[in-house]
Every structure is written in C-alpha cells, then in structure tokens.
Length: 249
Image (cartoon, rainbow, N blue to C red; front, side):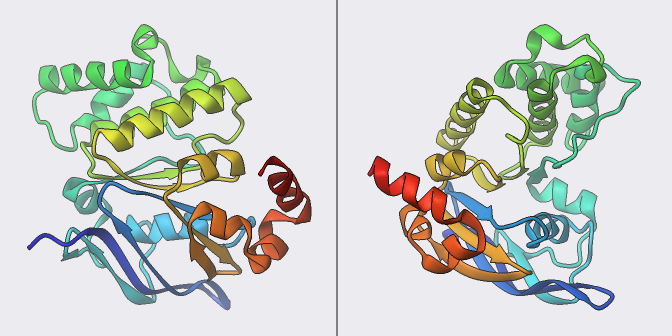
C-alpha cells in the first residue's frame, strides 16, 4: 500500500565544526500538499534542502522518499528518483541560452537532444518564458531568472519540488504571478516544499508550515496556528506582523 507521505525526515542533524545547523529535525510531506518552512536567517532552512538533496551528508537521521531510503544517495541519483529543486542564489550556464539551460536539465531523464528540446520548450511555455527561449540568462529580469530556475527543476520531471526563496526580490505583481503558478503546479499533482521570507505568500500557499530557529524545529501547524503561536511571533514574525494580521481578521 502506497504511503500517504512522499517525504519523511527523521532526527535529521547536520553539524559544521562546532556549529549545529540542524538538530533532530522531524517532519513529513504528504502527497500533493505544500509544506512551508520559515524561520530567521541562519535557522537552517536551506540546509534542510541541501541535506535532502545530498549537497551535504547528514551527521544523523534518515530521509525517506516514496518509501525508499535516499539518505546516502548521490545528488544525481536523488534527482532521478523524482526530487527537483531551485536554488536561493540563481544558478545557470552563462554560455547557454535560456532554452539550452532547460535542455541540460531535461537530460536528467532524456537521452535524445530533440526529445529534450521538446520537453524544455513545453516547460518554458509552462512558466511563461517561451518568448525568451533564445536569450542569454544574464539578460533576464530577477523574476524571469527565478522562473528559469523553476523551469530547470520541472525539466527533471520531479514528483517533489523544493523551492528555495523563489519569490525573493520580486515586486508584488511578480509575486502574485508566482503564487498562481505554484498553486497551479499543486493542482497538477506536484508535491511542494517551499522556503520563503515573503510571509503573505507563505500564508496563501502553505497547507502546513514548520518553523525553524537556530537549527531546531520550534513549531508546526496550519498557517493560522503558526501566525498565532507566541513562540513563532517572538522568534520570527514579530509583534507588528501579528497585529497587522489580527486587524485584517
């Protein structure tokens, strides 16, 4: 029987010398849900993504994806099992066009260039970049660079998407378009974990949220529960955010 959890992280711990970046982190992600991860800078959010995708090896704990243990797999193996991700700092091949950047990602599952090109064109249409397929990535706006990151992740044919601050630096209209795109991806069947500092977006998108502080999970719950949690308000959201939210409600 298929488990309802696509990702299950247990007792995840990562140390860098004397610094404990993650300490005994437990969480799961149900199929089809959007899980948000929030917390102050340095809380360990991106480190979770890096450990799940084997950029870093954990010092302790286990990671199950689709019921299989991926804790010690290599990064490319994890990608091929169905975990795709974006990076907080946008990464692209500067000498390749937008299209060829996505073609390169499609080679994760496709061996033929023409098939990879067709896949890349479909993905670029999906994220709104089809008209810019022949331009060089460095000439893109910040929003388009973020969407190129997403296109590359989608081209690897993931079942689980890890989105790391995909809305950082966007204006309100660009943020709204990205929120709509992520919601559409969820409706299409993608399971999503998102790290983001844009709280209005996190509250609008997330089915559940976990909160990190100094490498420890301090809270987990629905967006409303998180917004009202005194420890979360103190550690991250701040009294001003809570007051503003209470006025809206």
